Image 1 (cartoon, helix red, strand yellow):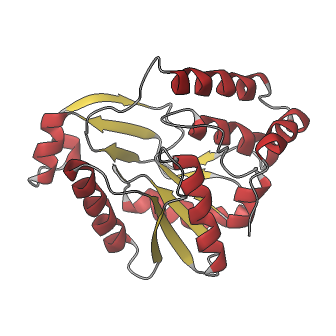
Image 2: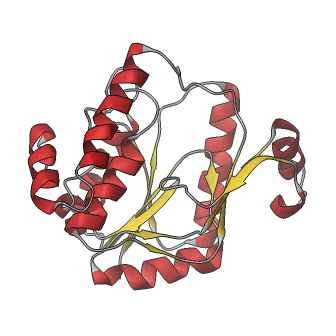
Length: 227
């Protein structure tokens, strides 16, 4: 089985660049035999949705059976990641975690100095995350419509894809474990026109929850496709 590990990524601040290297090194240690890729769709501003789609295209072209999409500021645990990889042959979306741990600025500094993540200070921890690290077959990614590139800027695209995947592939499966988010200044732009538009588009996915026909129609508007 060929596995590709994709980080949607564009160089930015020194802090973000350092986190990217930390995450890349971590993933290489966990999966030394995988194909490791950074993907940038070229959108302005940077598009996580578009770059994830581009990463899946590259992984598919390289012959990958399974693709892991991991944010450049997020660390995943080995056991649930390997469990998700093995299970993803079923053609549904897998999340290699049940808990999301967001380290504080001080907690991130402590982690980078060698303190175990579960001993570091956090800003939040919860069980409702839908992004961060995704494990899926490339063909299943496109069956679920790919990620909606109409989401511009920060937020909402992860939950929209999860909603589509649940309806079109079958219920997403989560594997017991924790992902850890490394702190950096927030760039959400909450209240900006882009953020408001993203929230409005997300509401359309929420309204179509569990309705494959409505979701296929919504996906058809952005018409993301494989190579």
